Image (cartoon, rainbow, N blue to C red; front, top):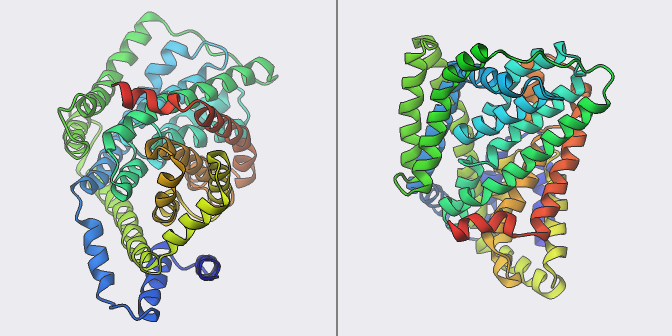
Length: 423
């Protein structure tokens, strides 16, 4: 009864338009007071939530992605990939997904990936006969790769909550991320084959390829430093984020695509997103402390152990709940609300937390592009100026592809676990 009342109260506050951070924090504080617990536990819980070195990587990765966004680095990356594959059937779509994949390996942010690549690719693709819903859906979905392909901000938050290895989480996201990108590319090929409006692009000359590739090399160099540094143990994820900020700043300055005004804009955007994320973390920590004192996670674990004995049924229930929550919550909020409740049940069912993280993140990716409040839908609408109905129409095929990838990860856990266990 307590669980139902708590969830109902949370839904009501969110539907009233109260920000997620204040809904979680307010309900958590009210639970502490109602239960006779000291309200001092609230600030203590908030303090403990930020007493983590790994969380420093969040604003640093955000700063790096904003520097690259303001410096126009994504444009050079897209041009380089386009020069090599643009003449293939569906070439511009393939170039878009490939660019999203590479940029995801730098930024760790779905919003930055969608905004950066979308600002370049939308006009290119629509001019070549790709219909707008397909273009909008492709870029919205391509942007979600930013939270699956490492470095990933939601995976950092997941690691902080569960105390799992951030490096193992990053490694686990590589193959599923590439698998999903491949699914998107196959759909682009299918679209080009059967679309009547598609116009093939001319093949780039060797000189054009050389010029475009040289301009994109610094971006590829940056991705290599970040990913290579983390996986070889040279950097911790936090240190790699600091190195990434430094190198990205050097790149945009040397390429003469940066200015003081753009640096201020990058810093301001970073501050806004960091404050938003950290407020949600603070509110969720108070909420988590309260539900722990009320023994709600333990009750749910007992409920699961008594009524759900199959991993498949548990995963199906979690995915269904996340799909519904995705209609009105963004990714970090879902992660911070659900994981403190779900994590104790993983051990009871023998579920690997690393594998479960990939399942969870794929569902979060779906939430980023599910209407009515999928965050990437708003990003694409802002970048393109398109109608929301066109964007919503275009994302559904990609949601299906994501769910197919989720099924593959479920039935073949090695897709996620082979790299971290054998690296």
